Image 1 (cartoon, rainbow, N blue to C red):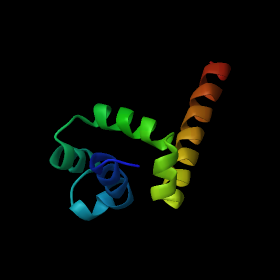
Image 2 (cartoon, rainbow, N blue to C red):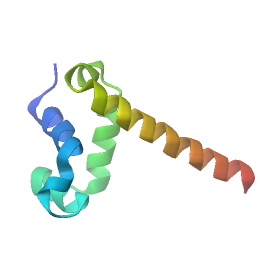
Image 3 (cartoon, rainbow, N blue to C red):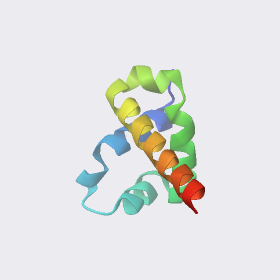
Length: 80
């Protein structure tokens, strides 16, 4: 079962552009934390089965995006 903060995190990820500000501003306004802290928490949340049960499409999309970023980073290391 997800706590309220986790559910709000997933809700922000699904609609941050509605805030009319940057994503970072939405993170600070909603959670009063730095974007780095938020993204660490989000990364852990994406691995939580309860998050997948709560918002399956969103979590799978965010996992794919994370996997692509990690793949690009590893490709850069190999070619450097």
